[in-house]
Amino acid sequence: MPVNHKYILASRPKGLITPDVLQLHESPLPTLEEGQALARVKFLSIDPTMRVWMADIPQYMPPVQLGEVMRSFGLAEITESRHPDFKRGDKILGLTGLQEFALVTRQEARGFQKLPFVPFLSDNHFLGTLGINGLTAYFGLLEVGKPQPGETLVVSAAAGATGSVAGQLGKIHGCRVVGIAGSDEKCKWIKADLGFDAVINYKHPDWKAQLVAATPGGIDIDFENVGGEVMQAVLDRMNLHGRVVLCGLISGYTREDPAFASFAQVLMKRLRVEGFIILDYASKFTEAVKQLAMWKMAGKLKDKQTILHGLDKAPEAINMLFTGANTGKLLIEL
Ligand SMILES: NC(=O)c1ccc[n+]([C@@H]2O[C@H](COP(=O)([O-])OP(=O)(O)OC[C@H]3O[C@@H](n4cnc5c(N)ncnc54)[C@H](OP(=O)(O)O)[C@@H]3O)[C@@H](O)[C@H]2O)c1
Image (cartoon, rainbow, N blue to C red; front, top):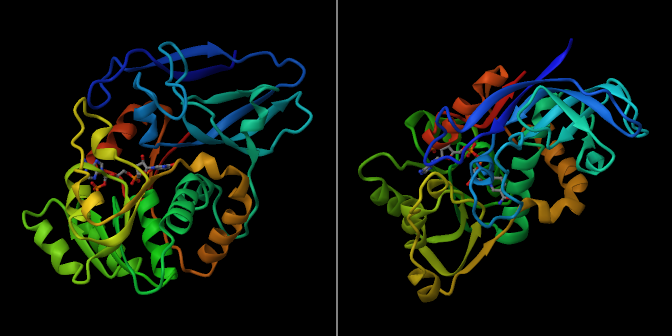
């Protein structure tokens, strides 16, 4: 009898994911009712927000409840359908959950989209550069950051799925782009292959002096993915009326006492700090994906993926985001 394997949130993590947090369960595949479809998950998107969803704190979606399938984005293929909008073989994107099969109910169907077709690009790009990460970089930089040619843009977690796109979009829009990342290898990739103007490995002892040297005219836009000490060093270099695109604060997601950057520079430099959540821009996704796909096909957006294999890699994969073990988009192929 065919079964589904799924990860249930069994306890709330303190720090990184430990074996008691996510438990692997097995259940029979459901018999479809009218209006339902069943989809086999092909790729799982591993995102820092999953660690936020595990915590019982106020956030932009309800936290995952104990005993529920762990929430995640994924790409799946319909294997059986009694839903009018989906047929066998259709590929879909949406909140599949950390499991092998996702049930698409009438109620949940609006949360799933059919995969667009773009020639010469593999499907899993729609979970990264042409998916949530590319869109986050696009709307965060262009609508919140509003880059102008000649401005200096600093991007943190710059070799990650979102940061690597944000930096390249900064180059496309004529900025001088400085990336901050956690290894020399990552720094080499974003400078040599992605065209960043300067790079800083924040694990080097003199990285703050390097940041000063790399931003002689100060910083106009901070595309902030990290928070804490990294954000503070960037805020200290901001120019008058600079913009802080508050995309993420990953350095705090696994900590009970996240280190915050001080508001002092926000006041002194009259900065505009704006947090945003990509879901707010959903009505404009189609146009943005077309634009990102054009840049991708023109060779202006390069990317890397770190792909693990097998559902059982999910707990380890989530932790990789917090130890910096991924470069570019982190995916699990099932
Ligand atoms: N606002 C939104 O709607 C939205 C949507 C998507 C993502 N985000 C945010 O964007 C950020 C990046 O997400 P992503 O999905 O693209 O992940 P990612 O950048 O591909 O992976 C996370 C990276 O963060 C870096 N990192 C982890 N802990 C760190 C620490 N303590 N200090 C400095 N760097 C650290 C690591 O790279 P290093 O090796 O460089 O340390 C790691 O590879 C996250 O903050 C996420 O929450 C926001």
